[in-house]
Length: 244
Picture 1 (cartoon, rainbow, N blue to C red):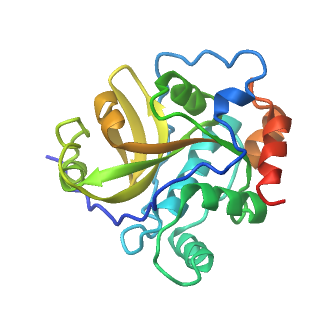
Picture 2: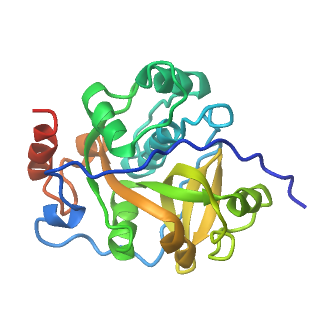
């Protein structure tokens, strides 16, 4: 019998899509690569909690986990922020307040300032109901950066190593949470949260998903030089306007 896993804190604030930034499909130049039936979860020895047991830094931890997953695509030898560094970055971003993050604002900040040795080159929202494009984003870039609503039953299921199903996602919401999706098959999407991998059924995803983002890291762009069917130059122009 597996030992219970500790679940951590929540800290994903209500999301938004900045005016002038379009859905990922708008930036497609031709056809996106066809996603395979399944993408295996990256072989990461220890995803680490990254401070999310003490702070609501899931938005910062979630993007760091995304960088770790992206390394499976780029095959780059990279170093990633540890627990102390993740918490320090989070508190610097929030001016010392354990206040959570708005994912769109945080992506914009990291695109401008970087995150230790990692970078965000570009990002675009993905319709949470467009599962094929969501899967394609995971396949192309290694992860999709997502916001979800969490119920107490979901916390218990995580603790008990049980998948998130529509049933456990139907209770009262206790808060918002950021998770990167890093794999999928015909039954589940697989995400990283609280230092572990969690399976979520597609019906449960539709019940609790609040936002999703395709993220092209600087490491990905350096290795591949293109967006695998997405016009990075057009996306860059729209992102640059957000800070004009």
